[in-house]
Image: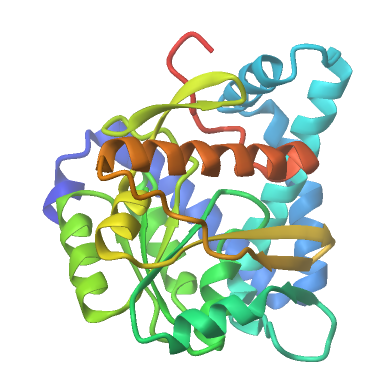
Length: 302
Protein backbone atom coordinates (compact mmCIF):
# COMPACT_ATOMS: atom_id res chain seq x y z
CA UNK A 1 0.00 0.00 0.00
CA UNK A 2 1.38 3.41 -0.96
CA UNK A 3 2.13 5.95 1.78
CA UNK A 4 -0.63 8.31 0.66
CA UNK A 5 -3.14 5.45 0.81
CA UNK A 6 -2.09 4.58 4.37
CA UNK A 7 -2.95 8.13 5.44
CA UNK A 8 -6.58 7.76 4.32
CA UNK A 9 -8.97 7.39 7.31
CA UNK A 10 -10.41 3.90 7.62
CA UNK A 11 -14.04 4.82 6.89
CA UNK A 12 -13.10 6.77 3.80
CA UNK A 13 -10.79 3.99 2.67
CA UNK A 14 -13.63 1.47 2.95
CA UNK A 15 -15.83 3.78 0.87
CA UNK A 16 -13.09 4.11 -1.71
CA UNK A 17 -12.69 0.33 -1.89
CA UNK A 18 -16.44 -0.08 -2.39
CA UNK A 19 -16.44 2.54 -5.16
CA UNK A 20 -13.49 0.77 -6.79
CA UNK A 21 -15.19 -2.62 -6.67
CA UNK A 22 -18.41 -1.25 -8.18
CA UNK A 23 -16.51 0.45 -11.00
CA UNK A 24 -14.32 -2.62 -11.56
CA UNK A 25 -17.41 -4.81 -11.94
CA UNK A 26 -19.02 -2.29 -14.30
CA UNK A 27 -15.86 -2.10 -16.42
CA UNK A 28 -15.79 -5.91 -16.64
CA UNK A 29 -19.46 -6.01 -17.71
CA UNK A 30 -19.07 -3.17 -20.21
CA UNK A 31 -15.95 -4.80 -21.61
CA UNK A 32 -17.93 -7.95 -22.50
CA UNK A 33 -20.46 -5.92 -24.47
CA UNK A 34 -19.79 -4.30 -27.83
CA UNK A 35 -18.83 -0.62 -27.77
CA UNK A 36 -22.24 0.53 -28.97
CA UNK A 37 -24.14 -1.74 -26.58
CA UNK A 38 -21.93 -0.78 -23.64
CA UNK A 39 -22.39 2.93 -24.38
CA UNK A 40 -26.19 2.53 -24.54
CA UNK A 41 -26.37 0.56 -21.29
CA UNK A 42 -24.02 3.02 -19.55
CA UNK A 43 -26.18 5.92 -20.66
CA UNK A 44 -29.34 4.24 -19.39
CA UNK A 45 -27.80 3.54 -15.98
CA UNK A 46 -26.30 7.02 -15.74
CA UNK A 47 -29.62 8.74 -16.47
CA UNK A 48 -31.46 6.55 -13.95
CA UNK A 49 -28.97 6.71 -11.08
CA UNK A 50 -26.90 9.89 -11.51
CA UNK A 51 -29.57 12.54 -10.85
CA UNK A 52 -30.16 11.06 -7.39
CA UNK A 53 -26.51 11.18 -6.26
CA UNK A 54 -25.52 13.91 -3.75
CA UNK A 55 -22.83 15.32 -6.06
CA UNK A 56 -25.55 16.24 -8.57
CA UNK A 57 -26.43 19.22 -6.36
CA UNK A 58 -23.44 21.05 -7.88
CA UNK A 59 -24.84 20.52 -11.38
CA UNK A 60 -28.22 21.99 -10.40
CA UNK A 61 -26.58 25.04 -8.79
CA UNK A 62 -24.24 25.64 -11.72
CA UNK A 63 -26.97 25.31 -14.34
CA UNK A 64 -29.32 27.65 -12.50
CA UNK A 65 -26.55 30.23 -12.26
CA UNK A 66 -25.50 30.00 -15.90
CA UNK A 67 -29.03 29.73 -17.33
CA UNK A 68 -31.16 31.76 -14.89
CA UNK A 69 -34.11 31.88 -17.30
CA UNK A 70 -34.40 28.12 -17.58
CA UNK A 71 -37.33 26.42 -15.91
CA UNK A 72 -36.80 23.68 -13.33
CA UNK A 73 -37.91 21.20 -16.00
CA UNK A 74 -35.19 22.39 -18.40
CA UNK A 75 -32.53 22.16 -15.70
CA UNK A 76 -33.62 18.66 -14.68
CA UNK A 77 -33.71 17.48 -18.30
CA UNK A 78 -30.17 18.75 -18.87
CA UNK A 79 -28.94 17.04 -15.69
CA UNK A 80 -30.44 13.76 -16.86
CA UNK A 81 -28.87 14.10 -20.30
CA UNK A 82 -25.54 14.98 -18.65
CA UNK A 83 -25.69 11.76 -16.64
CA UNK A 84 -26.65 9.80 -19.74
CA UNK A 85 -23.51 11.20 -21.37
CA UNK A 86 -21.31 10.48 -18.33
CA UNK A 87 -22.71 6.95 -18.07
CA UNK A 88 -21.76 6.41 -21.68
CA UNK A 89 -18.26 7.75 -21.02
CA UNK A 90 -17.73 5.32 -18.15
CA UNK A 91 -18.95 2.43 -20.29
CA UNK A 92 -16.61 3.45 -23.11
CA UNK A 93 -13.43 3.24 -20.99
CA UNK A 94 -12.91 -0.50 -21.53
CA UNK A 95 -13.26 0.14 -25.28
CA UNK A 96 -10.89 3.11 -25.67
CA UNK A 97 -8.40 0.90 -27.48
CA UNK A 98 -10.98 0.17 -30.19
CA UNK A 99 -11.37 3.75 -31.40
CA UNK A 100 -9.87 4.27 -34.85
CA UNK A 101 -9.88 7.97 -35.68
CA UNK A 102 -8.71 7.57 -39.23
CA UNK A 103 -10.57 4.42 -40.23
CA UNK A 104 -13.57 4.15 -42.51
CA UNK A 105 -16.22 2.96 -40.07
CA UNK A 106 -17.69 6.47 -39.78
CA UNK A 107 -17.66 6.41 -35.99
CA UNK A 108 -15.56 9.54 -35.72
CA UNK A 109 -15.47 12.64 -37.90
CA UNK A 110 -12.23 14.61 -37.69
CA UNK A 111 -12.13 18.29 -38.66
CA UNK A 112 -8.87 20.24 -38.80
CA UNK A 113 -6.50 17.29 -38.80
CA UNK A 114 -4.07 19.42 -40.82
CA UNK A 115 -3.30 21.34 -37.62
CA UNK A 116 -2.27 18.13 -35.86
CA UNK A 117 -0.01 17.23 -38.78
CA UNK A 118 1.49 20.72 -38.75
CA UNK A 119 2.34 20.48 -35.05
CA UNK A 120 3.76 17.00 -35.53
CA UNK A 121 6.06 18.14 -38.32
CA UNK A 122 7.11 21.66 -37.30
CA UNK A 123 9.99 20.55 -35.07
CA UNK A 124 8.88 22.47 -31.97
CA UNK A 125 6.64 21.79 -28.99
CA UNK A 126 2.96 22.70 -28.85
CA UNK A 127 0.00 22.77 -26.48
CA UNK A 128 -3.48 21.35 -27.06
CA UNK A 129 -6.14 22.77 -24.76
CA UNK A 130 -9.55 21.27 -24.23
CA UNK A 131 -12.17 20.78 -21.53
CA UNK A 132 -14.38 18.17 -19.94
CA UNK A 133 -16.65 18.20 -22.96
CA UNK A 134 -17.77 15.19 -24.98
CA UNK A 135 -15.55 12.17 -24.34
CA UNK A 136 -12.43 14.14 -23.44
CA UNK A 137 -10.25 11.01 -23.36
CA UNK A 138 -10.42 10.72 -27.15
CA UNK A 139 -8.20 13.70 -28.01
CA UNK A 140 -5.14 11.89 -26.69
CA UNK A 141 -5.96 8.80 -28.75
CA UNK A 142 -6.53 10.86 -31.90
CA UNK A 143 -3.19 12.64 -31.53
CA UNK A 144 -1.28 9.43 -30.75
CA UNK A 145 -2.78 7.67 -33.77
CA UNK A 146 -1.51 10.56 -35.89
CA UNK A 147 2.03 10.15 -34.55
CA UNK A 148 1.77 12.90 -31.94
CA UNK A 149 1.58 11.41 -28.42
CA UNK A 150 0.69 13.98 -25.76
CA UNK A 151 1.96 14.68 -22.26
CA UNK A 152 -1.09 15.35 -20.09
CA UNK A 153 -1.54 17.09 -16.77
CA UNK A 154 -4.86 16.49 -15.07
CA UNK A 155 -6.66 16.49 -11.75
CA UNK A 156 -6.45 12.99 -10.30
CA UNK A 157 -9.57 11.30 -8.93
CA UNK A 158 -10.00 11.68 -5.16
CA UNK A 159 -10.25 7.90 -4.89
CA UNK A 160 -6.70 6.52 -5.48
CA UNK A 161 -7.99 3.02 -6.28
CA UNK A 162 -10.34 4.36 -8.94
CA UNK A 163 -7.50 6.52 -10.25
CA UNK A 164 -5.29 3.46 -10.82
CA UNK A 165 -8.13 1.61 -12.51
CA UNK A 166 -8.82 4.44 -14.96
CA UNK A 167 -5.14 4.72 -15.81
CA UNK A 168 -5.16 1.13 -17.06
CA UNK A 169 -7.39 2.15 -19.94
CA UNK A 170 -6.37 5.75 -20.48
CA UNK A 171 -2.89 5.90 -22.03
CA UNK A 172 -2.57 5.23 -25.77
CA UNK A 173 0.84 4.33 -27.13
CA UNK A 174 3.40 6.97 -26.22
CA UNK A 175 1.03 9.25 -24.28
CA UNK A 176 1.50 9.93 -20.59
CA UNK A 177 -0.61 11.42 -17.79
CA UNK A 178 0.60 13.24 -14.67
CA UNK A 179 -1.60 14.51 -11.83
CA UNK A 180 -1.23 18.26 -11.32
CA UNK A 181 1.32 19.39 -8.75
CA UNK A 182 5.01 20.29 -8.52
CA UNK A 183 6.12 17.17 -10.35
CA UNK A 184 3.68 17.89 -13.16
CA UNK A 185 5.04 21.42 -13.54
CA UNK A 186 8.56 20.02 -13.95
CA UNK A 187 7.32 17.40 -16.40
CA UNK A 188 5.64 20.05 -18.56
CA UNK A 189 8.78 22.19 -18.70
CA UNK A 190 10.97 19.21 -19.57
CA UNK A 191 8.49 18.11 -22.24
CA UNK A 192 8.49 21.53 -23.91
CA UNK A 193 12.29 21.64 -23.89
CA UNK A 194 12.31 18.23 -25.62
CA UNK A 195 9.90 19.47 -28.25
CA UNK A 196 7.04 17.27 -27.00
CA UNK A 197 3.39 18.28 -27.12
CA UNK A 198 1.13 18.90 -24.15
CA UNK A 199 -2.54 18.18 -23.62
CA UNK A 200 -4.21 20.23 -20.87
CA UNK A 201 -7.84 20.37 -19.75
CA UNK A 202 -8.33 23.97 -18.63
CA UNK A 203 -11.98 24.18 -17.56
CA UNK A 204 -11.67 23.19 -13.90
CA UNK A 205 -11.35 25.49 -10.91
CA UNK A 206 -7.66 26.21 -10.31
CA UNK A 207 -7.04 27.86 -6.95
CA UNK A 208 -3.57 29.02 -7.98
CA UNK A 209 -4.89 30.54 -11.19
CA UNK A 210 -6.27 33.93 -12.13
CA UNK A 211 -9.88 35.18 -12.09
CA UNK A 212 -11.24 35.12 -15.64
CA UNK A 213 -14.90 35.65 -16.62
CA UNK A 214 -16.73 32.42 -17.44
CA UNK A 215 -20.46 32.66 -18.17
CA UNK A 216 -20.43 36.14 -16.68
CA UNK A 217 -18.82 35.21 -13.36
CA UNK A 218 -15.15 35.22 -12.44
CA UNK A 219 -13.69 31.71 -12.28
CA UNK A 220 -10.20 30.81 -11.11
CA UNK A 221 -8.53 29.72 -14.34
CA UNK A 222 -5.10 28.26 -15.00
CA UNK A 223 -2.81 30.51 -17.03
CA UNK A 224 -0.15 27.80 -17.47
CA UNK A 225 -0.96 26.89 -21.11
CA UNK A 226 -0.91 30.54 -22.21
CA UNK A 227 2.31 31.26 -20.31
CA UNK A 228 4.04 28.24 -21.85
CA UNK A 229 2.93 29.24 -25.33
CA UNK A 230 4.09 32.85 -24.92
CA UNK A 231 7.41 32.12 -23.22
CA UNK A 232 8.46 29.35 -25.59
CA UNK A 233 6.76 30.74 -28.72
CA UNK A 234 4.89 27.54 -29.42
CA UNK A 235 1.38 26.94 -30.84
CA UNK A 236 -1.64 26.91 -28.53
CA UNK A 237 -4.39 24.85 -30.18
CA UNK A 238 -7.99 24.41 -28.94
CA UNK A 239 -9.59 21.00 -29.52
CA UNK A 240 -13.21 19.95 -29.03
CA UNK A 241 -14.69 16.46 -28.81
CA UNK A 242 -18.47 16.20 -29.34
CA UNK A 243 -20.75 13.23 -29.01
CA UNK A 244 -22.98 13.32 -32.09
CA UNK A 245 -25.08 10.27 -31.17
CA UNK A 246 -24.50 7.03 -29.30
CA UNK A 247 -20.80 6.14 -29.43
CA UNK A 248 -20.16 8.39 -32.43
CA UNK A 249 -18.11 11.56 -32.19
CA UNK A 250 -16.77 14.65 -33.92
CA UNK A 251 -13.27 15.93 -33.15
CA UNK A 252 -12.62 19.53 -34.18
CA UNK A 253 -9.06 20.89 -34.07
CA UNK A 254 -9.02 24.68 -34.31
CA UNK A 255 -6.22 26.80 -35.78
CA UNK A 256 -3.58 27.91 -33.25
CA UNK A 257 -4.61 30.97 -31.27
CA UNK A 258 -2.92 34.28 -32.04
CA UNK A 259 -0.55 35.05 -29.17
CA UNK A 260 -0.34 38.69 -27.98
CA UNK A 261 3.11 40.15 -27.53
CA UNK A 262 2.82 43.24 -25.35
CA UNK A 263 5.83 42.32 -23.23
CA UNK A 264 3.62 41.89 -20.15
CA UNK A 265 3.37 38.12 -19.63
CA UNK A 266 0.58 38.26 -17.04
CA UNK A 267 -1.53 40.63 -19.11
CA UNK A 268 -1.06 38.60 -22.30
CA UNK A 269 -1.77 35.28 -20.55
CA UNK A 270 -4.94 36.74 -19.04
CA UNK A 271 -6.11 37.92 -22.47
CA UNK A 272 -5.53 34.49 -24.00
CA UNK A 273 -7.36 32.65 -21.23
CA UNK A 274 -10.29 35.09 -21.51
CA UNK A 275 -10.48 34.13 -25.20
CA UNK A 276 -10.29 30.44 -24.27
CA UNK A 277 -13.06 30.73 -21.67
CA UNK A 278 -15.24 32.53 -24.21
CA UNK A 279 -14.61 29.77 -26.75
CA UNK A 280 -15.49 27.09 -24.20
CA UNK A 281 -18.68 28.97 -23.34
CA UNK A 282 -19.78 28.73 -26.97
CA UNK A 283 -19.09 24.98 -27.01
CA UNK A 284 -21.01 24.43 -23.79
CA UNK A 285 -23.99 26.54 -24.83
CA UNK A 286 -24.16 24.50 -28.02
CA UNK A 287 -24.40 21.18 -26.15
CA UNK A 288 -24.76 21.87 -22.42
CA UNK A 289 -25.47 18.23 -21.56
CA UNK A 290 -21.96 17.29 -22.67
CA UNK A 291 -20.08 19.42 -20.13
CA UNK A 292 -19.18 18.18 -16.65
CA UNK A 293 -21.43 20.45 -14.56
CA UNK A 294 -20.41 18.54 -11.41
CA UNK A 295 -17.27 20.68 -11.02
CA UNK A 296 -17.29 23.44 -8.40
CA UNK A 297 -16.10 25.77 -11.15
CA UNK A 298 -17.09 29.06 -9.51
CA UNK A 299 -16.38 30.42 -6.00
CA UNK A 300 -18.47 29.16 -3.10
CA UNK A 301 -21.91 30.64 -3.14
CA UNK A 302 -22.76 29.72 -6.74
